[in-house]
Length: 214
Image (cartoon, rainbow, N blue to C red; front, side, top):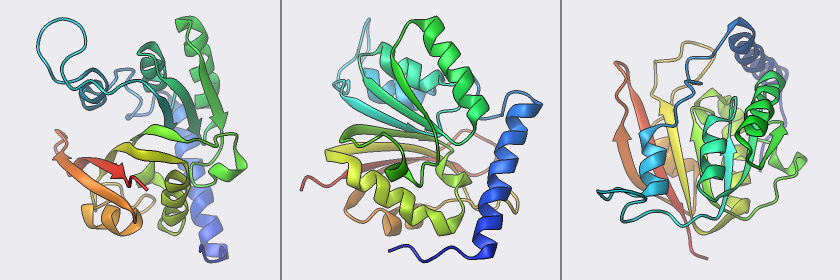
């Protein structure tokens, strides 16, 4: 059970919100490249050779993207047959995502809200795939258990979580880096099935977790 928020907790959440909103006011955030990462493509389309979707492609189902930004990856998933719900804390990002989804002619349910408070949003699940491109590492540590619990309650048996994170010491004082040990501890009932270092010149990682079958 989450402990009650303290004044310092509230201040930290507001600092994160302001920092994220500033990125969008100042222009395109560095994580919002407009290009779907190859790690997600490999999961969705498979790693086989040749034309079309390769061997090992993930069958389309229901997906929830946490911290969707301007919708690049939610739109990609929708184009590949997924039923997509996408959440972002910044209203400006959601507005841009709606414009992009309309222009692409795909249906994505876009929600403005907090990924650690999914019970307050219309995102009941269950979901077969969760995707998080640096959302979790922007969440204050005191809200990360709530994030994990929210996903666990919405996970279909065997659901996958693909998450990109920044490692410790890479994000300054406002955001806390993430480790594999933290993933194992917070996501009880999930299996950490893959850890792949990112290609950045500082510590980043792709984590893949699988929810339990029961």
